[in-house]
Image (cartoon, rainbow, N blue to C red; front, side):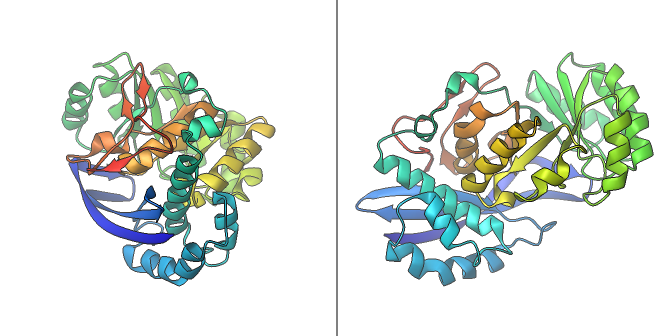
Length: 336
């Protein structure tokens, strides 16, 4: 078993702005596990909001190298448990490793990941396409550039309702709203009433992640379903979100990979909550992994590679009507 990794800069088609940051380039870490000529790839982007950098991911992989290459594990779940303490404060690094382990493991099984998990790719929900905060004119231009049936609109400005009203004049598509923690409970409840009239399907993370009292009010009075993102990072958050949100959005990088992500999805379902998996601005390595588990979901946000000016990988192909997986077993993404 051999571990290697590389850092790649991902240039974006447009400046991507959300409530708390903007960026034009996203750096990402690609992890590769190789054994007897078979390789698996995994990915994790960096994220300044969560303090996850290349500089704090790589040393953890090096500290864990002897376990990875020692071969004292057979399944991705076993490797994840072995790394629980090492990666406790850095799930992003563990995600890239876990994803690569799943790719390698299912390739050795000669099965696609979704086949190994017993999932039907025909049941994948249509992904939304994300429109970052910008001037209304530029947001409209981005929608016209990519004609899509579902748009996720990033909000968190002083003119949020005006933005949605303006965008609605240009499309009949479904809207999803992501405020990225920018609103108060009062704002969320008031905005939901208006947004419901504008064809909005749900609101994602309207309040700060720790504002549980506020979320009780929003959950009780909102005219729209609310989905947890920043409030649901790791497995222990799922139960906390029950009764405060109608659904959870699992980000594999924040959770620590596919292994805990699957557990979070199943736990949420057992609690009667709907489920979503979201992406970062990442290459087709990470996006293809998400697509394999997407048949489990009610909603999916896997447009990250579509936002790139140059994708350094090949993998899943996504259209509004169909998701096409690469040939061969495993997750199946490859670096170009």
